[in-house]
Image 1 (cartoon, rainbow, N blue to C red):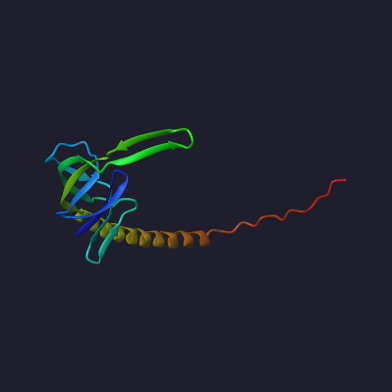
Image 2: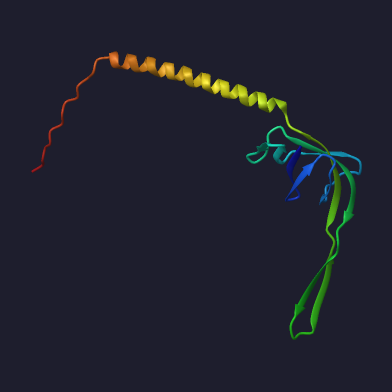
Length: 153
């Protein structure tokens, strides 16, 4: 089973047992965290795509550690001025291990019962519409007087 989660403005395709470096998450090492922004869940040929998220799907992970990424050098250079400014940046990250991917089994039951309810409601409304149409045709029709054109002089 795999899932696509969204964290830190990025999307990751995860499966149970994987290790990932994600943007810094404020949590202690060894603590469990859950990701509710699950965009897609798949198992074999069965794929559920959310709009925008899959309802009832949760990905559980454990924080394995924190660290800093590779240094990125920024150089600002002004031509013909003998001026240069150097600056470095190291992005903070959190290493996580995916423990579990959960989808609610109630979602499947709810969708099937919802479909059954919709079909039952559609059938009952169709019967009600037929009954109202029959009563409407049984009522007497009123004739409307024709308007005559008048001109102002």
